[in-house]
Each structure stands twice: as C-alpha cells, then as structure tokens.
Length: 403
Image (cartoon, rainbow, N blue to C red; front, side):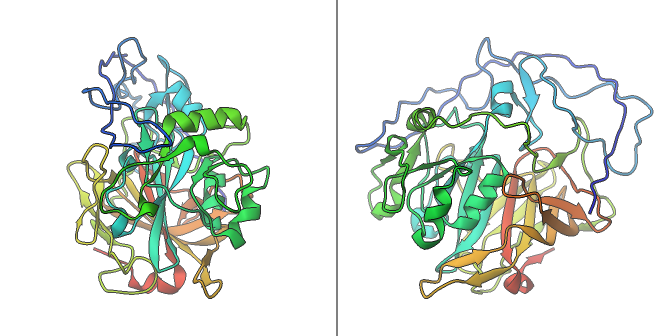
C-alpha cells in the first residue's frame, strides 16, 4: 500500500506563553541499588521558570483549508521557542525531548505487580501476551525527566525487542527468555540497558535497584532508576538522538484539528479480550477501555477496576487505542510465545470515539515501525496524544469486542 500525503496551506499566528511550574514524583522507600530523591510539591509536566513553553494552538487558518474530509496533518517538525511537536504524540515538548531517542521499559501487568509506577508518563504503551496467557507491557518514554524511577521492571521477550527497535528506542529489561532473546540482545543493532542476569553480556546494573514493597514477591520489587539509566546510556556510549533514517510511527492531525471520522462506527467501550474468559492473553484480567467524549480520552480498566499509576494516582488514559492482529504460536513446553511483528495484518484503530477498520504493514526492516492504513490504503490519521497498542493473537481475535 502506498501512503497518500495530504497537503494543506496554513497561515498561522502563534502566541508564545510562559508557563511556570515544577515537576515531581512520589518515590517509595528504597533498599540498596539506586536512590530515590525526595519529590518537590509542584505538579509534573509543565515548564520551569526560564524554560521554553509550548506555543498556543493555531488561531488563524487560511480559508483555503478544507472543512470536510481528512484534517491537515503534522508534516515537517519545526522548533518554536525551544519546543517541537513530538514524533510519538504530536504534542509540543521541549526540543531536546522531541529529538531524544526514547526508552522502552518492560513492565509486568498481572495483579500481583499492581500498581505500576510511571506508566502515565509513557507516550506509547505496547501490550502483548506472554506465557501463562497474561499480558506484559512495554512502555515507551520520551519524557522521563520528571520521574525518579519506573517499574516494576520485568524480563524480555523477543517480539517486544523487535517492536522497540522500530521506535529506535533504548530497550530496558531485567531478565529474559534466554533461548529466544540472548543472541538478539547481543546484536549491535539492539541498544539495551539490562540488569546483570545469566544471558546478558553487556549489563548495566547501575540503572536498577529494588524498592521495599511489603507483601510483594521479590520479582515485583525491581525498578529502573533514571539517574542510573542516564549513567548507563553514557557509559555504554549509546546514541541519544534519532538518526537520519528515523521513521515516525504515526501521522497526527495538525494543531487545532481533530481526526473525527464522522462516517465511522461508534466505539466507546473496547475489550481486547472480550468479556469472557479465554486463553488469548487478555482473558485472565479482562482489560478494557472506556471513551470519555468530553475529555476525548480512552480510560483503562483491568480486573474490574481503574488501572491507576502509583506515580500520580491518575487513571491511565490515552487518545488512541490500536488492536494490531498478529500471527502467534506456542514455541515450547515452557509456553513461551512467538508473535509476528513484521509483515502485515489486520488492525482496528480507535480514536475520537470511532473505530477505523484497516491493516498494518511493516516491511522496512527492524529499524522501522508498523504503519496503519484504512480500507482504502490511506494512512490512518491519529489524534494528538498517547497511544495504547494491543497485540491481538489472531487465533483469539474472535473474542475481542467493542460497542
């Protein structure tokens, strides 16, 4: 399929505002390996005094812009007042954040691990089944400066590594399915920050530590610490900016516009594993998303409850949800799974309370992401904000529901 570009002429009037605020976290008590600093009182995510602030939304739009059909999209990124639109969310962020390679962090998603810490700051959350027929998350962070730590952090599976490579992300894990990941993580094309366990040949122990979590199993007490992460990236001599061949994963509606898809079917309740037990990965904890029309966000629920980030006590919410159908199979007696995250397959994209039926393609190699297309072969336009991608084992696609 060929991408069809949408070109529009915009005349913009941008008013620059300065937003003052600080940033902080709520770290837990910590045991050796890593240090958690005391958090200031201010809210995260806004510019500090003297720091660049995001430009205002576009106010003056040329009359030549079409009022019906697809909206104009973000094309060339430009730096304005120290800010640039993110490749992962389309939103205005500091230029150094927009151009910095993200980190992709493996995070458990089963009940004994809850609550997770820092997920609300991720730009993309990728969810896929693992052995035991539960799901695991890979959170992709471009802005992690406001966090002291992220986690708990868990072990690697190769299909997550391949997805992270498509985002040019630095991959972070504690443990691995050794028969399928060991050699992959040794490749020069995979830049990883990994805890020192058997099968890891370039460990970065300075990035990891444990927090006291009374009542939790040890496997759910390991975290990635941001100060150690930065030290490890420097010591490993990893490139910290996107290269010239970087391909953004999404096309976003331009500032001041929404991809409305008024002709598409409504879908405000989304169930990746349906509402009955099944062994496809989503049937154990029955996660789902509910669309809030006023806030234009999909809120995440799991196991009958809101899925909450311990960092700021917020419910996880995103602007876009994707169901990416992938071929899956069981590899061995340990129930390790394999998923095809290259090639092509069917897809459903949920945005603005609508569902767009389409496909995904990934033929450009490991360093390029999957791209999403509608039934006509045009690239689907995402609304600005965070995105949650659910890997749907195609054998179990019959169970998914939306309404």
